[in-house]
Image (tube, rainbow, N blue to C red; front, side, top):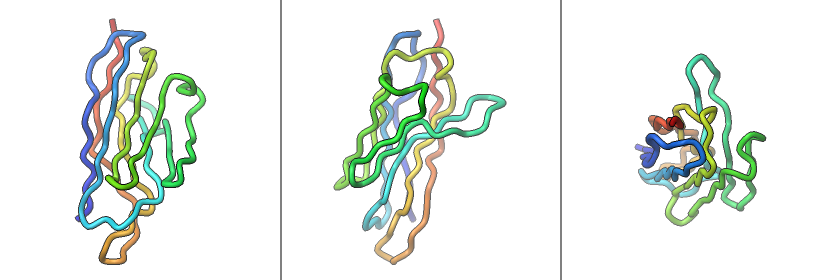
Length: 121
């Protein structure tokens, strides 16, 4: 059973930093890509940042230059370093793993349970 366990998040003042981490486990052979999405109240879930196992990255325009995503392919973990956070970054952040191939030869996508990030003075 594949699980994504997220850590980090919380309350931070504008201009502050937070680090989100996500670890995938459960008979995983490989993962094509991992990423972070966010959903603010009343909004649709949107992609924040994505990284492939080959190291290619993609960022939502508003976070470029402020957020950095990294992936440890051997450990099946992904980290999102968020700097210069602003109130509009407030949302629930979800870890996502794409193309997870398990030792049972099943390939699927998975979501974490979500972390609250609140940016407020």
